[in-house]
Image 1 (cartoon, one colour):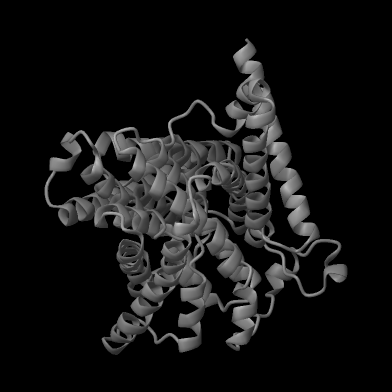
Image 2 (image 1 turned 90 degrees about the vertical axis):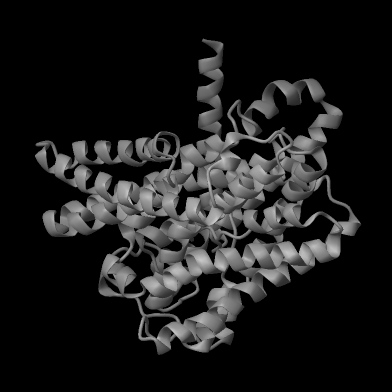
Length: 455
């Protein structure tokens, strides 16, 4: 009984903090990611201070909240599926297919380039082994969907630019998680059977394609099953909650394919089929409910993960400043290099429309990391199969990278967009109807189901 009461109180406190952070972000016209990161870092710093002055109180009350009795992978399994599924429900599937070439270039090519670039930069400057530095690069190689999309919408980026970022953020987690898992297996002190499943590239491709096929089938079955139910929209929404929650572990543990790819393709299939089989009002209600669901999941994992940042960064010293700065520079250069070298090639081959150089700069600068990177860092920090030095270096550097990346790139994205001459897009009539009652006081700020969550 006591455990149930404590769990209920912790959940209530978590939701209360999320609500206060969102209100503060609205008040100061910042995105939720900054409010949640600030609150999480302050909680983590307070935890470190309380450890010295009130260790007993900290162990019984603070530790269970900041460090729940869950394996670190549980953060991905619990929070990531609804975030990805909702993002897939909102995306323009027709535009996604039209720009599939550059989206795959960003989702896979940019992840590999960032992992290699950051890994080589830190290897040269830190003295750590190359494979440990590549693991760090893989951890920080993925951009966060909830953070990046909200920042791009608030910065007034054009629709095509937002579509590219949406498509990338839907798929790049699968590549980053696969590379991180591969490198973690190579570094383990005790070899496992997972290290002997075949060539890494073949394993990744089979996992990705298998996850996409499994997810698309599950999404089609979901739409067909929900159509057979007579209590729409309640039953459809309840069934949709079960879909990503069950699909992710089924793909990862049952079929050994990418759970990220499965959830994303299930959302894309459901998105596409529902547009032809549901009324606009039913679709709008369904997506609105999922906006709130995914918003809470995103905020929860962001808050819980960022609260671990001070403890992870406590292991850094002044010798790590230079490698960290090089890692940030390498992440930007590798991302920009992929865009400037390969994107024009795709355009010449007729695979996609050309992308202006200013838009390439903005996409490169907008590679903001978030809770997925922090969660991967926590997974490494708590993986006892790795050496203590490996865990300390990779996790601490990744946590510091996310914090500085948010401050440097996230806070300046709107300013960079204006400096590049990318004018804010005009609000559509549909978005104008979603303005809040105080829109006049707030000036030209736009509101939409997605921007409300991230603003």
